[in-house]
Length: 319
Image 1 (spheres, rainbow, N blue to C red):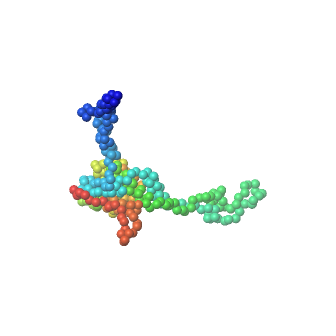
Image 2 (cartoon, one colour):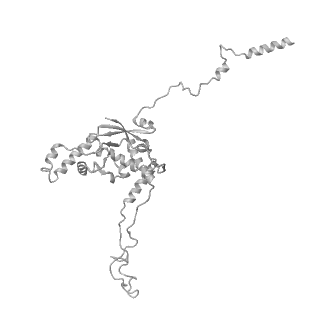
Image 3 (cartoon, one colour):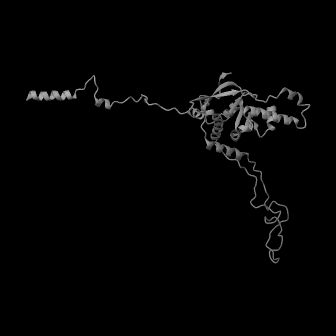
């Protein structure tokens, strides 16, 4: 009996023995790959369109900005800018608040009318209260009479509203970022001015009179903007300069349908959004960012050091 039991035990162990050379079907069924291994299946690539490339590009800290010459728009330098300056996501709510805030602050609020106590004339009763058969009437200044006072008319008032400075500054950088992401922000070297032909400089003062000078500038500026793709066909263009450039300002005044030119002191968020292209000087962009980065600059002074925001533009390459 003991030998027979040992035989049964040997058969059971032989059935459970796992072969080393040939893995069992049971082991192969539960084999799995490591989590870090990539799938073997073929992946289909989406077509590389410009919009897809732009959406897939997600810079971490800095973005490139090309500096151009004017009016040829040839690249002359390359700079690095912080994503907090020129690559903010589109926030329509901030832009709306900023545009409404600027519109309210530019309203004059000077409309004024006279009430019945401010109009000229005697204040006695026009006719008796009873006995004439006509309606009761008070003084001549009554609003129901011609020349009388105005009821609930407008008076001078202040329409300005309040907006948090940090919200307004972020709206500024959001507008610039929106232009940059669409490729509509063109930054040129300082001293951006229009170069007029030599023959114009020779004959302008003596021969171009009675409107001929304005006509010449109109045709010349229309041709320049059309060749650069900055005219009316491209949605008009806003030029922003640090100082007044006489040739550029005079030429753009003749073609208001093609665009406009403003000084840095006269530009607001609405101006940055309402045209097709925005062309500005390098110093203008730097000044705008420095003025409108209060939400990035810490006002806490630690050991005599004021913590500042990101670096405002760093030149990487000069062409």
